[in-house]
Image (cartoon, rainbow over all chains, first blue to last red):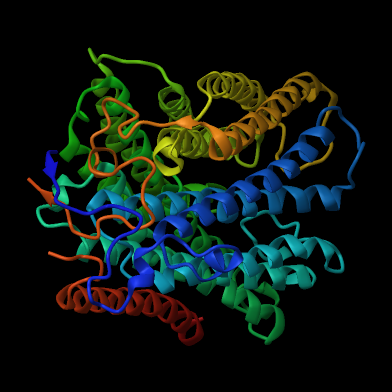
Length: 538
Length: 40
């Protein structure tokens, strides 16, 4: 993509006679800047710091889980609290860490990469973010409710979720609020991409990150109302005498599973498609080659999104669906390997014969590529009905989805932060610390989750605080890996804070091969307002 | 072309897009609820 611009991108612009001179200056000082901001960069920053906080909060719950599982027997937490920790860990990481992190990236990058001055609806953008705070307080605060936080698992299956205490109501309200936030954010992103692009920025010239977010936003709009509907019905079952999922009243608990996973499987892709977009920006930059097969990457992303709507049944092979249903979901699930394979092939081809260097973002992108592929393969294993019936609810499943969501989504987020931090902050991070962070994360992650494949194959069930003696050794290794992985994230936190507070000045185009508008058209550090005049894309 | 503010056409198209998407989301939610309320 080549582009040229005649824009005035500076922090202290002019009053163009619109009577809005205040918008051309830098940000106001203090808390009001963040409370009332409508600037996409500020809101992106808030999303990223919020997700960072929630990541460490959810991570601390994971540390307690691994501490308890270090040895067989009950050491530190009782079974009820253990199940609450696994449940809230999942909800916090999905709705509090991974999703807001990607929305933070979208806020920062979508306007910059399409050449827009800001998001289409800046005030709604502010509201989308601030809704997350009460939602997070409700969710995490449910630990203080009588009976403690919910212990049903993040999937909220009835009948347990119909029977639990007021913490379930708090969780249901939190999910409603987060859903509203996600839908508003998605509307904003789609509207910005479709309507606010710079002249000449056709859809097929957009960076792949923008494409993946466009498709993700459609997924969110399609499935978040389904989640909202399912938890609304759960709420009325609990308090208003309905029996949607209550077998005693003629309802069907299995129906909740169908509705939930109709949301839940696309949700997996909501958490991985933006990661594909980030990796598709990083790999070409450090291979110093254009992305191989750009158009096929776009079509593969759309194919994955469409297929995600017809595979939900693979999460519930054990509930007793007809054999034909099981077979349909098995084959449909396997079909997803085709567009995913296209992506893996294109990423490898992008690197092939490239002038590669291995700075921290590239290490995380390659780590993503290797480990996400392992997660994809274990997903194919679980797609096979008879195998899944054996492995259902075992640690094999836990290993699988952590390979997808940690070494997939999280590695891409971390790689993306290292990649764009010089542009965002105007300062360069410490490369040595970044590489140390990568290698400790890589080693810690694999020691943590790879043995869980063995544990699952040997029959260890998930969501238990105690286990049989034969599982002791791999659990010990898994916990050691967990502590390494968890502690190494403080290196990341330190590195980011040290960079923002006083890193060395970064260059305008810190990465030689980066070619999207924020690198080619904007100074470093970026002014508060960018693209006041639209760039013209050739 | 000054772009600090979206053009009137962009603003109009943005509102139309947003209304359609919001209606889609609300429609999915209400259809799901209505299906189970009416048919169980």
